[in-house]
Length: 344
Image (tube, rainbow, N blue to C red; front, side, top):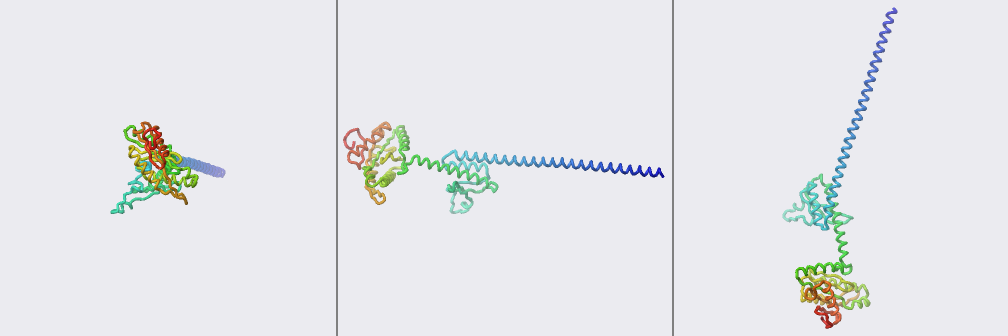
């Protein structure tokens, strides 16, 4: 009996030991599984982070490429102050970067009346900057995936066009007299220097007209400065109408004008001067409720007949103007020699 009890206790002990051993093994396996899962999770996080970093790196690379492309386009289209040249640079850039069949300014789109589809095949992108429409780009055959990039590039072209036009406006203000819309004295001097050098190098005649409004002070005193300004504007208009496109006219100062006549001898210059004088004398200048009869005196000098140097030519045309004033005004006088004789 005691032996049976002992054997039973031993059996129970063995079973307990085996149970505890199995429990310990299972716990160890569970712990191992948890460690594996933990390691696996960490590994997956590393993979995900790596993928995220790769995606971020690619995004940064794409952004850098886009910025570089914008820089390249900006550098190319701002290398000129001519809109046609700026557009040519834009077109070359988008043709290299995008899938595009054709791109041109609207003014250059072919209008084939026999084939309306030629025009209808184009799509149009307005060039806007600061709420201003500066033009329109026509394009066709653009890949759908490139539409956003084309839009960005076109906006850069619009900014370039605005820059060009602002530059031209500033340049125009710098060389144009605000009252008469003629060349300023400074710009006139620059052009005179250019034309005189050309006349010297090519042995060509060059004539200079100095034009002064007769009794201009009386106009201001009797009718006011607004009437005087109106007279100057009208005289400037008449002068511009009666000269050639190659001639250069400007406001020399106050009520005095100057006209440079390239490739024109003394006789031709006298004809032009007389035509201007007569036209102004016949013109009725309206200044608000006042009608003015205005006349001018004109002095003429010519290279190389009267002078061989630029300053000398200017001096002699001014001297001829002085003689026109001295001899009665409303007349043309060509320089001959320094003398007190009227019409010298």
